[in-house]
Image (cartoon, rainbow, N blue to C red; front, side, top):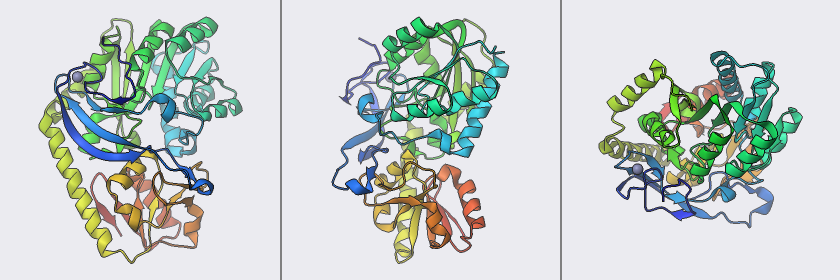
Length: 416
Ligand SMILES: [Zn+2]
């Protein structure tokens, strides 16, 4: 039965159409969970490794991970990711809130729900603009940050049961947002059915996620981690939502996190904005429906891997560090496993919850970036490469005049 709710373990079928006609895009081997940081004081605990194997469904062209770890293991009290500590992410979420208010003519009384609201950053942007009928849904420990923002929150997974509770207490929402969540859940059918229960007929469901076209174009194999079960194109997303009675209304792409897509769905049968067709054509012209696009992607990654390896091998006596540890950095470190030997440690900004931890499955400590003011590295590998310009400019100004900055992706780049 096609219900889009998957059990833990290997899948032998497409997550969306259930076809068994799958072909491998990339095999990243066994890796620890990208967010499974180990406290420095608890180094005896070992990380569990799970496969990351990305397949393309030849029938419906969905790109997907064929191993399901399970929501309860991935999203727990110890979740470390918080959008609220990154200025650029906060600014982007502010734009999302502002545009939503303008485009949909929101009234202060309209209910706005954010699913997977994390620390409440997106909802607090709506609040900033004077909207107070807000509700966050967040299963991990980051839900506590809603309280300091004075925003209501439900500390639970989102599914049809939670949706019933919400409907009973708050009625239906005009806007439901979900950013970097929709590609994650292994109970996808439950999730979409839940949305249907709590969205107004004239409401809009706004999904934002990493975007397949950018992943392939910019060689972002590091977006393939256990949490990302699916990597959406606009075409595949429209097909999926149609199965549940949703119509696409708007779509736009952005540079966020190295390339994101935002898609707006509604239960009303209204004409989509011209952007939708524009993006669909772009996907077609790029060759997202052609398996050879993905084979070429795989060979480009191997070239980058070799180039980085040779460079580090030549410079192995130097003082080399990694900069920033978003979840995706874990994937880079494990697939380009020689990095584990070459990096001395990784630095993160002073407000990061990751400080004092070891990167999953390694003995690389994540330390406060203030350390660099007095201990200037020869080489800095920017693992959060999607912020390469911001990070390199900032640290050049901060006094790292002679440090060589390296970007591993989208191409191996040396910046002196
Ligand atoms: Zn399929």
